[in-house]
Length: 181
Image 1 (tube, rainbow, N blue to C red):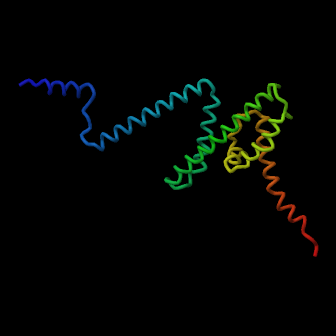
Image 2: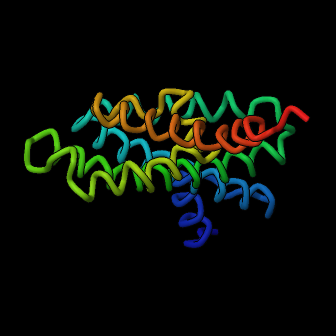
Image 3: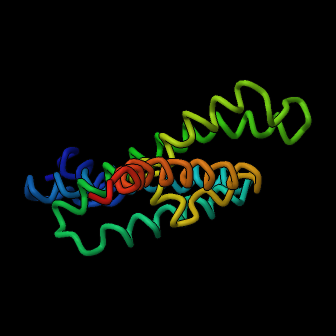
């Protein structure tokens, strides 16, 4: 009693393995396979970037460590949401900082003066707003801008200091205008 189907099924199982018997096991296998593919792709992308510029890997590691430290005491559902929100905000700050880094590069190469109108505009408006934000301050406190030039870091710290000074002035001015009566 030879059955081609039985033989085919046996060959198939020998080659690829016995399929899961329950739907939940099948779904879990699909999920795990998808996670493995995603992790493998991310690993390969990271390897490509880090091979070209090792500082990028260090930056990502420092960001990861700083985010983990910030959210470690939160309960799990809130931790996941806070982590996602924080990473989005960090990403936004880095996008803006990258724009300034391009100007900084021009300044460092002598193509742009430190007194150029664009540089002044950034130092007076964009950088104080960015570094005065909660995430901007946190990034400076955690040295997440150390990958930029020394002069750019100086600009970032000065921007934060200018915001802190301007936030202190109204309280000081109010105290100074009091009378002796």
